[in-house]
Structure formats: structure tokens, C-alpha cells
Length: 197
Length: 197
DNA sequence: GCGTTACCGTAACGTACGTTACGGTATGGC
DNA sequence: GCCATACCGTAACGTACGTTACGGTAACGC
Image 1 (cartoon, rainbow over the protein chains, first blue to last red):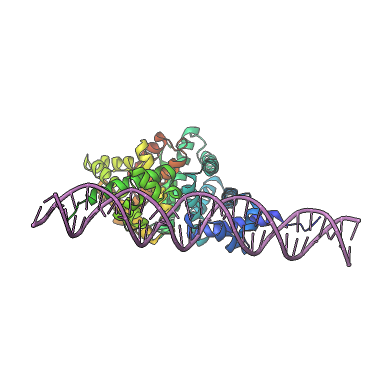
Image 2 (spheres, helix red, strand yellow):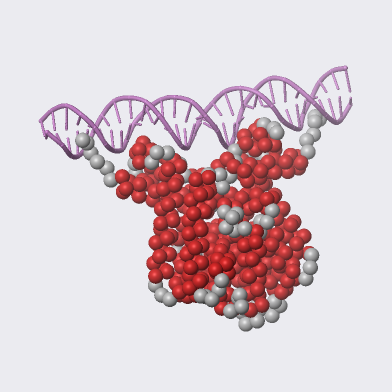
């Protein structure tokens, strides 16, 4: 036998480096050499950890989902349904620089998904999971609503949040933190007034 | 003297080809060779019409804005403020394949703007122009609202519409035409119930 | 109709990409 | 302590990109 490596740790560090490069230089700047430089290793090591560039992309995409998912879990578990819904939507918006970075990465993956079927599948899966999460919360807030209305409201809320994220990534002045919170709160007020409630 | 060319027509045809490639193969597939092939000419002619690739990108971005702007003008002019607002928002969503193509191009430019300051400036300018348009319409529908509320409502509506567009570009099943119209109409209902009205 | 000139196609250049092959190196078992 | 082997850095390959230089060609003025 010979020396053993911590493969999981390498994967984590490399996908973090991928993420960092993606956030800083955008999709065109995401090269294996840039990732290797950011991670402090060589392209050879990168391609010994991941089979090819797409495998690295897929892993970084999963990492992004895991991060946002964990934050959503934390926000959701703290409080009654109404507060949980608001907390989940707020954390999905991008008040901090860290989350603004995530928004840039998210936009990059969205654009990449337009030409890459694998990334497109991942995007659909993760986004629908997010919609399902919001649907469940809406149903908890408004138990009397039919499921179809809950689902429709959830897709609206998700589209609003992701739209805010995407637009704030390029124009943080117009889509300020305050504007984002305002938009989300206003949309949530609909839960009290719409659909015959 | 020698032969004269129709520079404006060439620019139009080339930026249309740029657009077509962008919609079909995404941002990574947008190369000068692909544009030339789509336009039925050579890369030499492309770079005789535009100084470099970025000039072509900028022109294509302006073309996208002009298209959406013209459609918005047409929708806006047909009817009273309330109907005009709804028409402008509906046309901004993507019920047809042509507009779904535009949505893909829009996402591509959004991602490119993350790394290209020139494209980022263009994006901010055009998006703010769109927000201003919606703000004016909201103010026409609700004349008694303070301008700040009109602006906040407009940014929300724009974020919702662009979010729907972006998400529908990758997942047209979840964000169907019906779901998009439903989301817009529900958001518009807020104009009657929110902000003390 | 002919020379001049604007225009465009061809082909090459330099660069950077993803990927691969190979050699060195460190590490675990014995 | 030494060997075998898993691991990684180096360097190269082929490709495709943006860009440039140059030669051919078609059209306008006279």
C-alpha cells in the first residue's frame, strides 16, 4: 500500500474553490487552472479527484444546494409556520456578502444549465425541492387552502425570491436589502387577503 | 471609390445571429465562428463590422432591449393604466417560444454581466428603465400612493416577472404559462388590497 | 473600360482551454 | 529499512478560441 488521501476533504476544498472562482470571475472565468490555483494545487490533482470538469461542476452545484438547504432547514425549524415561512424566504434573499456571492454562483449555474442537460436536471430537481418546501409551509399557514392554491402561491414566492437574488447580484443598489425584505413581506401579506381568506 | 456596404443591415443581421446562437447554445457556445456560420459569412466579415467580440455582445444586448422595449410600448399603449400594466407584465413573461428564447438570452447576458463591467452597466441601465416604466404605470393605477410605494411595488413586480422568466427558461413545466399568468395576476391584485387602499 | 479603393474571405498566429501520459515522491506494510 | 504502490506534479497534446495580416475581388468615379 501507499499513502492514502482524504478524498472527501479534497472534494470539499475543490468545490469550494470552484465556487469562489465562479463567484469572482463568473462562468467564463471558471477553468480548471483557475480552480487549481485557488485551491493551491495543480490541475493534475483536480482531475485525479474529479473525473472531468463536469464532475467538478456537478459537485459544486450539489454543494451550493446543500448550503442553501441547511440554512433553510435552520430558518424553518425556528418558530411557528408563519414565522418559519418568512425566515426561509428571507434567508433565501441575499442580505450578506456571503449570500450575494451565492446569488452570483446561482446565476452562473442557471446560465450553465441552459446548455448542459446534467446541470439543468440538477437545477430542476433542487428548485422543485425548494418549491415543495415553500408549498408545505404555505399549507401550514393556510390549512384551508386547496393544494393547488398553495402550490401556485409557492411558485410565485420562489420566483420572486430568485428574481430578487438574480437582479440584486448585478444591481445591489436598486435591489437593496431593504427593497428585498419589503418585497417579500408584501408578498407574504397576500396570504391574509387573497384566495377568499 | 469602391463598393459600399449597408453597415446597419449587417449589424442587424449579425446581432440577430448572435442572439440565435446565444439562445440555442448558451453563453459558452457564443463564438465568433458560430455567429459567422449562423449569419452565413466569415469571421473576417464579423470583425470588419464589429471591432471585437465585446462590441458584438454590446450590440446584441442593445438589440434585446430594443425588442422587449418595443413590445412593452405596444402593450402599454393599448388600454387604460390597469390593463396596460397587466399587458406589459404579461408580455414580459414568456408564453411563446420566441419569448422563451429571449429569456434564455437574458439569462445568458445576466451571467455575463457578472464578469463584464460593460455588460453590467447595460443591464443596470435597461433594468432600471423597465422598473421606471412599471413605476409610472403603478402610479397611474394608484394615483394616491406615495412615489416610494409605487417604486417598491414596481421593483417587486419586476423581480417577480424576471424570476419567472429565468426559472421558466430551465423548467418550463413547473413555471408554465398558466403558472406565470397566475402569479402576475395575483401580484397585481395586491394593488387593490395593500398599502392602505 | 480602367484604375482606384473599399470591402471581405482566407489563413495564420498566439493563447488558453480540457485532457492525458508519465515520472517522481512520499507513505504504508513487512 | 526497504519495497511496492497509491498519489500528485509536470509537461505535453490536440483543439478551439479571439484576433490580425494579407491578398483577391467587386464596384464606383472618371
